[in-house]
Image (cartoon, rainbow, N blue to C red):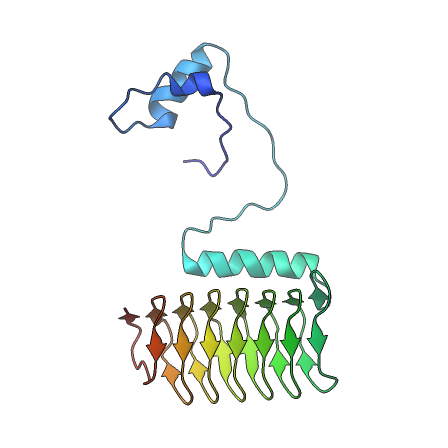
Length: 197
């Protein structure tokens, strides 16, 4: 078992027979080690397995907590209304906007050109670039990919994943754990933790 990054010289690739699967750890590394050419580098910083969506969220939030004692504006130009509530840690991308009486955080990453509308609530969520959350909507514990548009009075449940360029119309409810695939317009509620293709 390993959880590292390999840097391999091109000549090592010559040890791999074309057209078949190979295990670097069992077949190639022992040969390289016998030649005295296998090296390691001790690494003492954080290392995260992001092989599942849950792990991906945990890694993002751990790094956010470590690097963001209060909300930050990566690249500057984020605009936060005076009466919006930011609960740290929160990271706001370049040219993002949080409107009046919105609640953002804790544990929220909002990408560049993101928008959280009036009275919307976003908690424990990762929102990629260009995501727009409509007025009075709630996003809790979800991942929203690039270019997602969330209408008004929408509720997105914990563990949901909304893929790129999805539009969710007003008053729709997305069940916890639902996965919405790209380029969909969701105009009715998703009541189970299903894949919507």
